Picture (cartoon, helix red, strand yellow):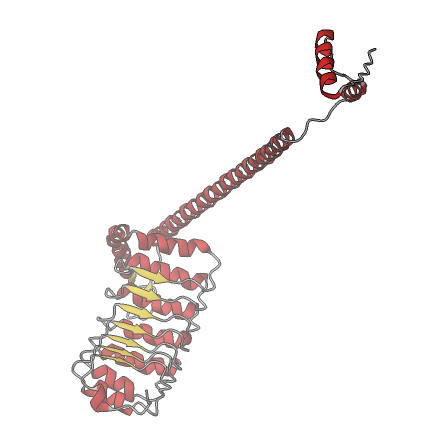
Length: 370
């Protein structure tokens, strides 16, 4: 698609996808006009372009649009100044429900600007700020906004530079705002895994968070009441925070409760690890047993093969001539040396002689006996 956009083509569309189009601040005039004039546009996808929001033309048009619900500006070139312009538009816009700003260059300063916008915006339900070099300071400002904004449900903050301090601010926001359903913080710089585990546990049990809200609100009211005029100063209009023993005790109790909750989560994680190790050991033992059975079966098969081969050899030899023993050979050779001639009775000889004489006249018989 050409980066020279056509307003008549774009104006009637509810969904516009111009991702991967090499768009930048200098070639989006028709797109800006569409934002200003469209009465049907609901989703605008500008993912993976070169838009920096270096001027306020786009953001001014966005502020006045009454129909857009989803805006994707991920993987562009939006830094803190561009984020500031966008934040000002978010303060005014009342239709936007999702904004995707992942993989830009917001930084802590940009996060601070957007947090200020979230304090006023009442329509956004999902925000995505992953991969924006946001650290603890930016997380602190965002967490403050998340605590108060009752519309926010889903927050993407993974792959940033948030450490334990910033993560704790976010955990406090989740505890205070029962409307937060999902918060993604993986791939940051936290070292205390208990904080992330605590966030996941709270997100998994929104009912428990709702039960804690009245007590939390009461504590905040008490803190506000601690702000009273000081009679110890010359200026009666000066206001200070009085930190009495009760307030300190409440804070210590809250910290202790959180410590216990984190300890319980760590213990649960440890138990899970032990169960996994036990399961691995059981699987290894089963594998060893299977290997031993395979070896036994292999030996049995080898033995049976040898037995079958022996039986085959016996059967083959049974069809061949049975070999004679030396004794048998001697007996057979002796039996052949005897000349056995037929025995003729005398009467029979006489009769035969007479017959022959009558036929031939003369018969000579030589008989030898032993």
